[in-house]
Image (tube, rainbow, N blue to C red; front, side):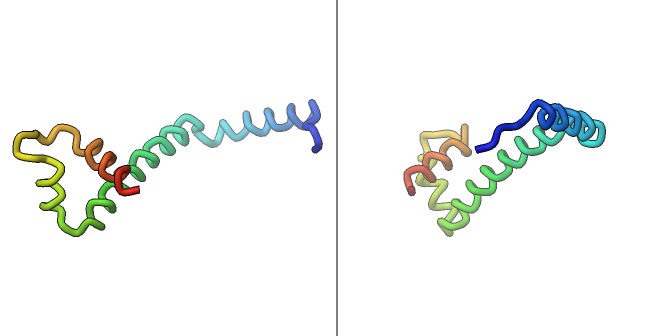
Length: 83
């Protein structure tokens, strides 16, 4: 296993500094976070779609005594129970 030299480290830091002039690193992190949320939302609705009978699921997950409070967590729990 080779180790990185001080010269290579300095060059990497210089290249990163140059890159930051062209790319908004914070925006990329924010975009990645938003994509992760979108992926989870898509997974939830694929799960619901794959069940084919949305109305049956809603009646099963939300008995008449419950209110629609946190649909995402209820879907997440149902998905977890299917694994």
